[in-house]
Length: 271
Image (cartoon, rainbow, N blue to C red):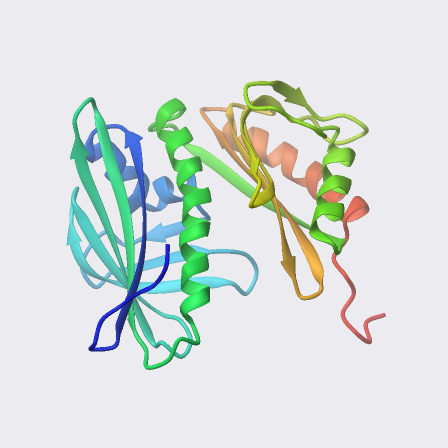
């Protein structure tokens, strides 16, 4: 969604999704640490005004904000410092709809005198669309269940399409179709489930699975350019009473496989 601008210099972008659940159930998923961690990234939330909200995107990539408004189960606002735009206010709302559904909406607002950061914030909305698909699956099939997520990051050589093909071939998942049950092969650790989404023409390098192995859950796999390489990301969200044990067993197996097949590039001058 394009950036909206007003004469005062305020800019904003937003994204939304319709999900199943009561406002209270949806609030737990988007406004508590365990809930957010079950579909986004590992997060903690101090559930009050002036509380801290933290999202951990990986080593050295932690986003820390302060809660400025807290009105469960309807709305909260978090302010974070993000580069030259200074403070960015992220407003989260839950709006009840008929038929046991709710709309979740996130609105980012910031002040800037130039367009320098507009493309980055437009990218935020595309990222939210992907995470919101995971949120919808979580609330549709695993609502209220404890989650144990982990993320793997490998790297391939450009072009992106070639790196993606290499990953899908290594996983034994080449040519998946929505509704098809798939499973890994070719020496990859066990992963099996139903294909919920394959990438569209504008962004084909994406796969979303609803898992039954190594435990009930969701896997989001995608590729994106990064610093002359292609980042190959695999996020697994496992749910239910066995999720923690399954994640503890699966993560080191997957990490070793990724490190062997798609290692991170060495920094210049590294041994």
